[in-house]
Image 1 (cartoon, rainbow, N blue to C red):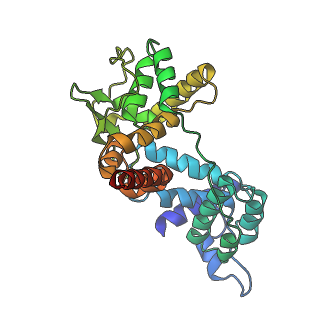
Image 2: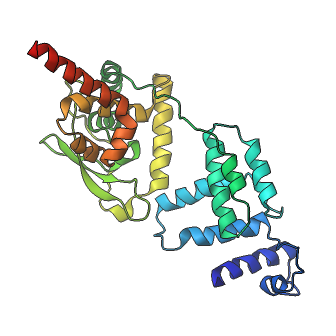
Image 3: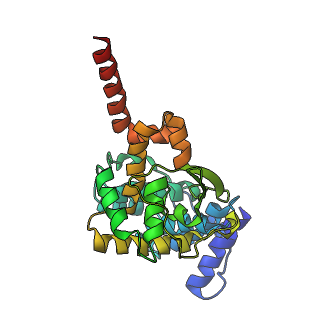
Length: 307
């Protein structure tokens, strides 16, 4: 409560350029019946920021999460009074069935609950089914073509080979440390609160090429030194470089292709999920179509052999 009051008072001082005649919470005590408390969007967002950082370690990954959340609040007029009518009105402007609408409504509901704005069921009514577009996952032949074409590039050759071979998240490749036994160590970056931790990745090669020389100093010696913002900047440059040479090819396509490859090459689905850095439930949600195809094909083969 103290933190919320500090944020609210600070916002009013910034708006007026001076201390208010009465403290905001004292004014609320004498509000006549039937009238509602008023807080601007800007003040509400500052309260949301305070609430967001409670109990969190201030890592660069967490800072990026707040930036994404804050980007949704930027859709609101900052000096307007925060009301449910305003949240609903802006929500209706977002395209139905889009991820944009879904994310805005999630943040709006969180903001409304924090500031005790009634009527969050109206935000729920605006939700429309969201289905992400089907991924265009490159084949192993296409991955091989890319790797063979760029493997000698002094900047991105090694990274592209590593991404195709180990199926890490693109930004995890910067910490990858390969071994002679077909495994590697990399930092798992998809964690909400804690610092990244090391995990073991597995090599599933797509072409008969030895590991190229790693010329770029991307080594990460400790989880605390991992910089999520810098990693994103590198990934953006890497993606741009790849797209100029192979239009339509996405870095994450290499990771998804590794997952599809693992279905036939890794006997345990749980091991494949661990190597990718997510749990088995996530693995099934992401790749259920290919997993189902593999199961059905295995049954069909067993039936043929038994006939």
